[in-house]
Image (cartoon, rainbow, N blue to C red; front, side):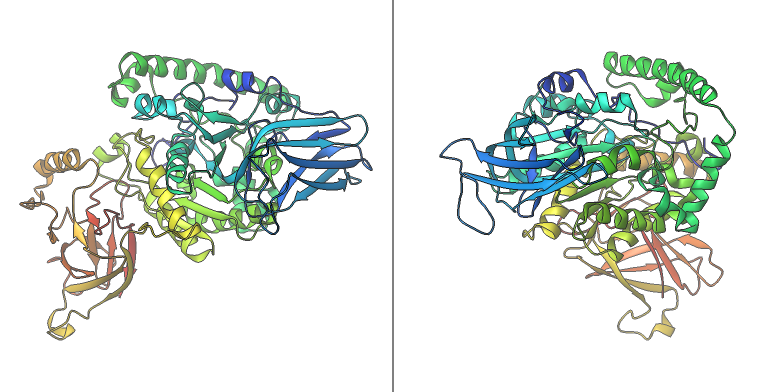
Length: 602
C-alpha cells in the first residue's frame, strides 16, 4: 500500500525489464551504428518507418566539423519516392555539418507514404552507413507506465491476435528502458531495432499500441505503413518523463525533486548498488514465479497469486541510476529519441501519481509542452488515455475509497480539453476489479485509434462519448422553484443517450448485493437494458447540497440530458458521475461510447 492510497502499480506483469529481448537483438545483429566520428541516433535501423507529410529529421553525434550527407533512394522503379511538394523522384538528399557540441541534425523534405527505400548516412570520407527496407508512413510514440507497457503476449486475446499479426507494414521499435546514460545503455541501444509485426516478433510490443496500430492499418489507406515507438517504463511517475529544469519551474515539480533528493542525498554509489541488487533479486524471483503460475494456470486470480507469492516487491529503492526516478526516463529515453518524426504520442500514465493527484494536471500540461519543444513541433498530437475503473480488493472491502483516481481522471480530461492538439481517450467502462493491469487491451487500443482517426486524421468516425456541457435547474414545464430536488445535466455527443451494461456488470452487481446485506441499500435492478432510467446506487450519479455531502441519485434520460434527484438532498447545487475508483459506469451514447466521469455545479 502507498500511504492512504491503493497498491502502487509497478511494472506490467511479465514485461521485459530492459526493453531488449532476444529476437530484437537478433534483428539488430547487422544494424549500422557508426563510430565516434559519425553515429546516428539509436532509433535509426533497418526496417524503420519515417513520418510522412512533414520534414524528416535525421540526427546523431560525431566529430565537430565533419560533413554529413543523408540520401533516401528508391529501391526499384515501381516504388518512386513521392514528395509532398514536387513530382516523384528516385532520391532525396540532405547535407549538414556536425556542430561544436558534436551534434548534427539534417532534414529531408516531406514525403508521401511509400517504400521500401534505402537510407544512406555518410561523412563523404571514411564512414558510410546503409539502412534497408525503410518505409514512410505514420509514426506514433506509445509512452507512459505499466498499462501501456503491458505486452501483447500477455493480452487476453494474445494467442489469436499474435497468430494473425503478420503485417510487413506494421512495425515497432522498443526503446531500451533506462534512467541513466552509461555504457550499458549504449549497448542496449545498439541491440535495438525496428521490426515488422509477425507472430514471432510482436509479443514484446505494447498490447494497447498494437491494437491501436492494427486499427490504423485497417482504416487508413492500405499502403500506409504504421510505426510504433514503444517508449515506456512501468511504475514511473509523470515526473520521470520531464527534465529537472521543467520540474523546477513549478511548485508541484519542485515537490517531486525535493522528495527525491531527501531519499538519495548523502548516500554512496556502493549503497545505491547494494540496495538495488537486493531488490532486483527479490523482484526477479517474484516475477518469474508469477509468470510461471500464469502460464500453468491461465485462469488463476490475483488473490491466489498474492496468497502464494506475496505482493509485488514495490517500489524499488530510489537511486540516481534507477529508471523510475524523477527525470530518469526523460534523460535516458525521451531526449535521445527526439526529434524523430512522429504524428503524435499515445500517453497512458497517472496511476503512480495518485498520492500527489493535486499536482497532476499542471505537471501533465508542462510535460506536453516540454515534449513539443523537444520535438520542435507545436502540432505533436497527444492522445491521453483516462484511467479506467479499478480498486484494490482490501480497499473496497474497507468501505473507504481514497478517491485519488477520480482526481487523476479529471486532470487528464481537463488537460486534453485545455491543450490544443490533445484528446482524451475515455475508458471508464473498462478495467478489472482488484487488477490494476487489466488484460483486455483491445478496447483501449481501438478506442484510441478512433480518437486519432476523428481528431487527428479528420476521418468520419464517432469517437466521443457523452460529454457534459451544462448543469441547470431548467427542467421544462414547471418552474425550477417547484422542482427543487432535480437537476438537468446536458450532454454533447448524446445521440441515443442510454443506460446500459458496462464491462463487469454482473460481478459488480453481485458485489453490491453482498454489500447491501450489511448496509441494506441495494437498489432495485432495472427490468431490461438498454434503459432510460437507473436507480440511485446503479446510475453512477450523485448530487450534493450546499453542505457538499454527496448522495446517490436516481437518474432519468430526457433526450440529450439526464435528470437527477435524491430524496436525501432537498436542493442540490452540485452533481457528479463516476466519482469513485470503482463503481457503476452505465451511461453511453448510441455509438456505444461511455461518458467520462465528471463533477459540476449549477
